[in-house]
Length: 100
Image (cartoon, rainbow, N blue to C red; front, side, top):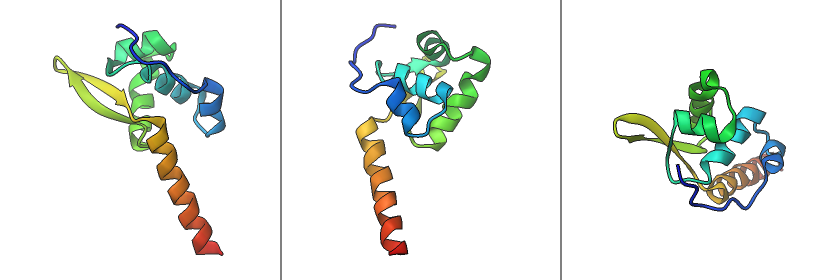
């Protein structure tokens, strides 16, 4: 599990965006790597192993991670935060236009 990416935002900023502490920690940890299995996300983030699959399912539902596989094991990769923010900004702009 070799860290390969530098992360240019903080955990606090993810929490300010509305992520729970566990979701923020899992996403933040995953952003430093291409792809990680559940056990590796648990080790890198400190999210309890008993919660990691639920947290990853929530992040997938939110469009923040994509599921993949490593040697037939479930694994995930982070969607770039810039793409997530662009989508959220568009949703907010559309909502603003519809209520104006």
